[in-house]
Image (cartoon, rainbow, N blue to C red; front, side):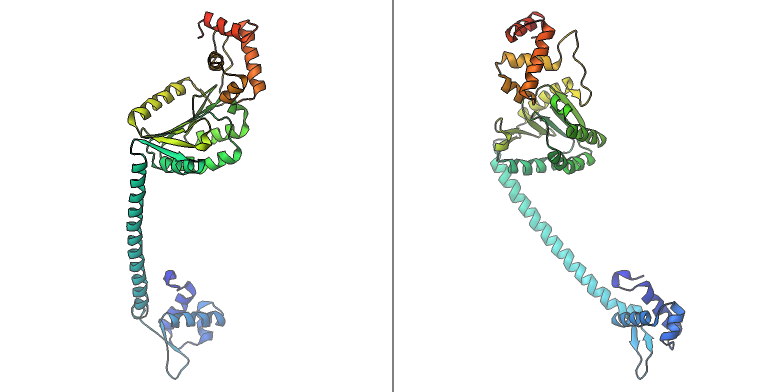
Length: 325
C-alpha cells in the first residue's frame, strides 16, 4: 500500500473496483467494497486529489489513471523535499562540528596545564556529564558526603544507566553510614542489577571521580559546591587510580558489613583511631564519617570498652601497644 502518501486500504479497494468496472456507480462500488456510500465519496475525492482518477467528461463516472503517471509527480516532489532535508542536515552537521571544535579549543586552552577549574556546582554537573559520556571502560567514585536524597539518587539514574548500558564498568565507594539509609541501599541494589558495583568504608579521604585513566575530578576544597578541578595529568590520574584500588580492596560490599572482629580492629576502629591521632573533634569525626555526633560518641565509647580503657588518650596508647597503629 501507499500509506505514506495518504492512500488507505479503503481508497485502494475503490480504485481496484473502478479498474474492473469503470461504469459502476456509488451503490455498486459500496456493495463491492463493503463501504458506505459516504465512505465511497470520500475515497473518490482522495483518489482524484492524488491524480489516480479523472472525472469523465459529460458523465458522473471516473476514469482510473495509470498510477505511474498520477503518483510519480508526487513522489518526485517528496524526493526533492528529502534531498533538501538531507542538504540541511549536512549543513547542520558541518556547523555542529565547527562549534564542537571551538568548544574543544576553549577547553584545551582552559586546561593547557593539564588542570581545568570549574566554578560552581552547575558547571561541575555539566562537565561531569560530558566526561562520563566519553568514558569507554571505567567510571569510579569516592563519595564521602554521607547519604544522598532520594531525589538526587533518582537524578543519577539516567546517566548511570546509559553509562552501564555502553559496557562501562562503574564502581562507587560510600561511607558505611549509608547502610542505614533505605533510599541509598535500594539505589545500590538497582545499580548492581545494571552491572555496577558499590562498596563502603568507615571514612574516605576525599570526594573523587575518575573516568578511564584520562581524567580525575576533585573538589576545590571541602565544600564541593564551590566547584572542582578536572585533572588530566597522566601521573596524577594514575596515582589517584592506585589510591582508589587500595581503598576498594579494603572496602565492604554494601549491605554486607561484618561485625567487628574480637581478634583485631575493624576498618572503622582504625579510622576512629587515626582521627583521634590527627586531633579531630567529635564534630570533625562526625563530618568525616557522615554520622551524627551522638553516633560518634557511641562508637568511641564502644571502642574504649573493647580496649578496656577509660579515656581516649588511654585508648590511643592501648591501640599502639596492641600494634593496631
